[in-house]
Length: 370
Image (tube, rainbow, N blue to C red; front, side, top):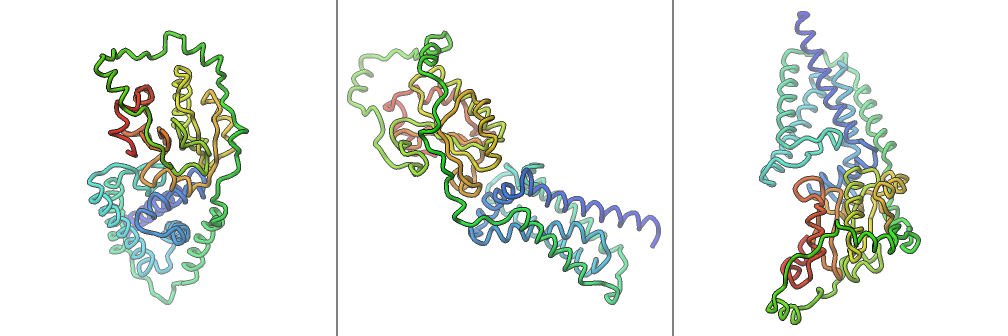
């Protein structure tokens, strides 16, 4: 084989190795258990995987990615097993991404190929996979077919087993009992904004005043309309006992998330301008929980909170939703649900308008919308 062919085959193998190793490492960012659990909820659960099987499948799959990224660089069974297996895995990923793109009717969101380290749309991932498969087919064609007698099968099994075992060691599967809410008594956390400071802020020029002049006819309607929605169970009473009483703001935050901190800061600013602002409660993901004190420093206030494990957090938030999540709840009815950092992200101006509006204006037509 000529020197040019050696350079081509070597370059292709290094490139494919880099892609697979990067994909595997990215699925462990920013921390193995958090990243893998997120991958399970957002990718595997939506494909129909059960909560019992998904933890095993995710770790085995990422372990195989690691193994193929390493094995493509060696010579044992390269053309008979490694290259075909790599092409097959890419083909499966591509078919899945194509189905997801068709079902969702678009090309939005992160496909999860490189986790949250390098967000990539489904179309971008499909193109990447197609190019990789073309390179692998080319590699298969130009590589000499080695004799089976010279290949050592133990190299493949040892590398694959070690890679999969490493994943189970880096991100041990949590037993079901560890998914319960960690004890953080409500009464031990108090709002750091005092009534006195709030009342002073209410008198500042920055307060948003209602400029709508209500006519006599509308006033008559107000008298006959209910002033608040009927009470119902929101499902969050296990976290906060009084969450279904009156108006509440329920937040889903990750302690180290910059967007979550910004949303918390905006909520604090809104609360300063409105002494009747819905009480704020937070459910934190148990990821970097030691950063919670810093989180409240950035937020400018402390609020009652609970901490729950990664997978229960994502399930509670909603598998198709993202952080930061902010819900407006009134007597257990979910009036508004903001999430993520795109079109449905938390909007302080919109939220201020919502909490200032009386029930009769718009709650009856929008309640229970998530």
